[in-house]
Amino acid sequence: MKQTSLTIDTPGRGYYLITDRINTAIKPLLTDSDVGLLHVFLQHSSAGLTINENADPTVREDFKAFEEQLVPRDFPYQHDAEGPDDMPAHIKSSLMGCQLTIPVTAGRLNLGTWQGIYLCEHRDHGHSRRLVLTVQD
Image (cartoon, rainbow, N blue to C red; front, side, top):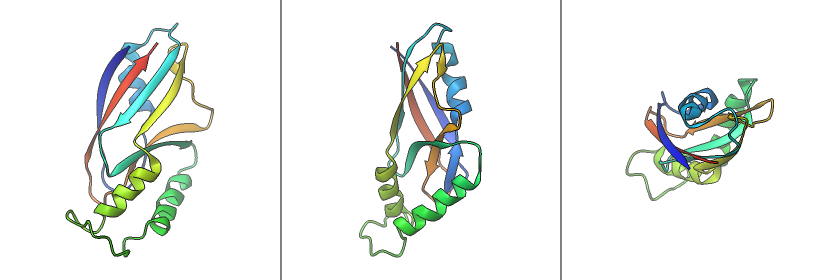
């Protein structure tokens, strides 16, 4: 088993394709013959991870619009210590999840043709998000 970490700075709320960043970070851990699993763990409770359509950028805009309808900011949350986007971000993080497991085949992520890995930033302002990448072969 091998492990590394990756820090990604986000500019604020949005869905950011990070597949290439992850591929670059794990490349030194893999050989062309490696078959195994990559576990991606996000060490934050106000952001999330998901795998989805990677070609059409309107998918990302639709995600943002839908999440605002699903988890409205004007709900009477009790937890608001860090502002009105704080508790909605925690709920969205729990709905999306903070970890992914992806097969590795021939030293590459074995994603579908139109699949990409998204870092889902649920806070209005930018943050540094840390991911732990563990390759099990």
